[in-house]
Image 1 (cartoon, rainbow, N blue to C red):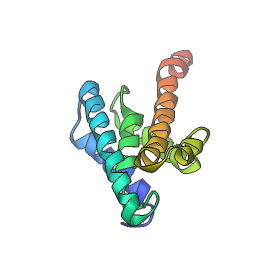
Image 2: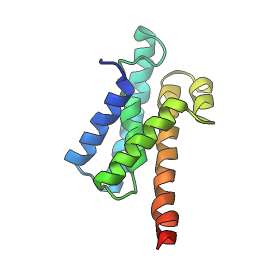
Image 3: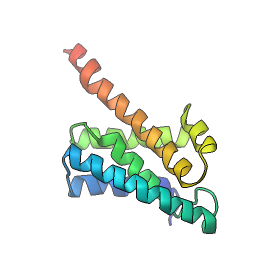
Image 4: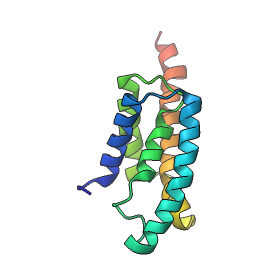
Length: 136
């Protein structure tokens, strides 16, 4: 895995969503399945590779998909979601860092990225539905 594996995992998710556009309901089902698989995979990986190994990026993939669900899938919003997701994942504002430390095993590995994705999604939703309409 190259340097910045989380960024590469998120970029892969961005390309995935642009090349294989899913409706939001199908995307939600895919995210739930991916979260389950990611929890198990991350749990297994921790046993052999150590805590939250950079070799496993399913958590970033899943977190990025959360950041784009229920928003328009335009290049601008997909890129904004990528940037926001990476910022929230890197800087881990509360409770992202707390979740990463408090929830053990694969669930903890996945949950901090889920929260980062939720934060990014909320920011974009606020932009679309509150800020842009006020701009006129």
